[in-house]
Length: 459
Figure (tube, one colour):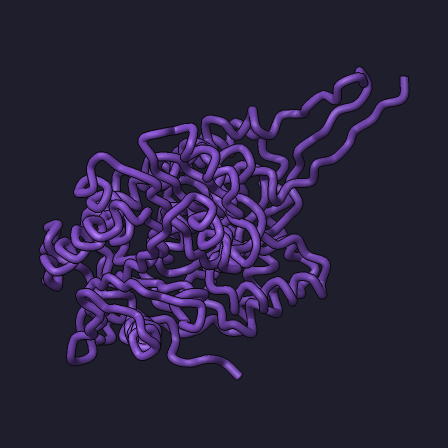
């Protein structure tokens, strides 16, 4: 049974449905599969420098249109205007990185000790991307850019609440010279996604989304022997071992947590703070949270917070916070959901969270900072690794060697010292445990959906 409603733009500030688009028909899905399969034969045969020139033009168009692209996602999912424009500009970096470095990253590599053997990096065919709403451009860029460079063709199923940004990306691809069938946007249903994964013409699938969605996609891909990359949830630890500037540490931690209104997979959802600075740190967070007010249309100030993506998402977060408070946690500030149909959730600071509470093990995908107090490095590591997620983590100290020693013990895919996160088009992104598997961005991102073929010539 097809899910409802269809793809639509719903203003998260008001709950008003602004624009709707119908689901793809089964005939359109078949047309897309046929088109991308036909296009693959020509695209893979095209000289890599020609593919690079087209991908480079995609990068330029993202940069040229950043402001108007940003306006679309501010309306679709409530992103702050400057962050929305910045996201589109980052896509310029990602497509540009792969256009500039793709030929070298995909070049044949010799095998030490063998003059007559090498590893080739070859495309595998059409690949399917199932993308999320929280970074509507960035997530697509890090999937599409390396695959287009590698010679694969792309079918893109975007989040149901991001149809206008999905269409804008498709328009950029077309204007940049990406041939018909090489990049196909499809407003598919969940059932149609399952059908495409099972179809032998699709050779791999990448999903960024929830654990639940990842489980379904991975199961379907496994049954059909398809390569899959999963970037799922996270509950990243953010450990402060010591600081000589509590206010500055709190400022950095709070700004990191409030990026995208807390709706980032690798956000610092669990702040683990040494007891000698804990009280001052919590007070500094509370002060910052209390100073924020709901963002109105056109407001891009630091003192305003955006709505969450939807009323339903905000209600789910409220239920998690209420569960914690009902079981003894302390809500210092915020945590209220605004009246009406909008999705404004007052930024909150929560302490006293214990393993009996949902907030201890679940991802809080919104503007809630959970702070834990510890008295030694071992306890900090224990709390950091206590959850089933393993995306990223950060450790802070004036003693870099101490922070490095703690960071090495984190069960994550991305460990950072004295920075919230190492981020860039050339730095790999991905997690471990229930945060998924596979990598995107950087040199590792282009390796996921290629045939690393041994080519051996007997002399």
